[in-house]
Amino acid sequence: MFRAGKAASLILAAVLFFLFSMSAPPCALSGCDDSGAVSAAAFGERFGVSSPHMKMWSYQTMENELRALDGLGVSWVRCNFAWFDLELSPGK
Image (cartoon, rainbow, N blue to C red):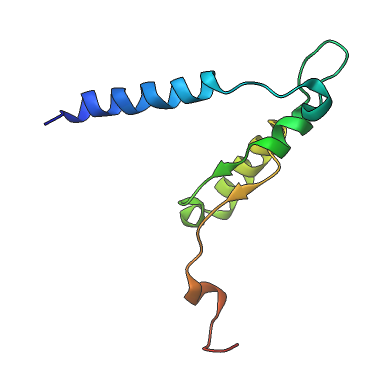
């Protein structure tokens, strides 16, 4: 059986391999400028952030995190919501 540290290292290695093995799309599709650099807007459209614990943050922490993500060019965040938080009474 794997120790926790070894398992975490293997997972990290697999994620890094996946990220570095992805081929970049041509500039016409990805939003490169004349220098070949990918714009932040193109990055934000291609990649997002999953934050299932975001609902547990204070308003100020959430605002700070969203501003930081916006500064990185991320245009969407996926998070979980409990159904009872969205539907306060059944059917309404």
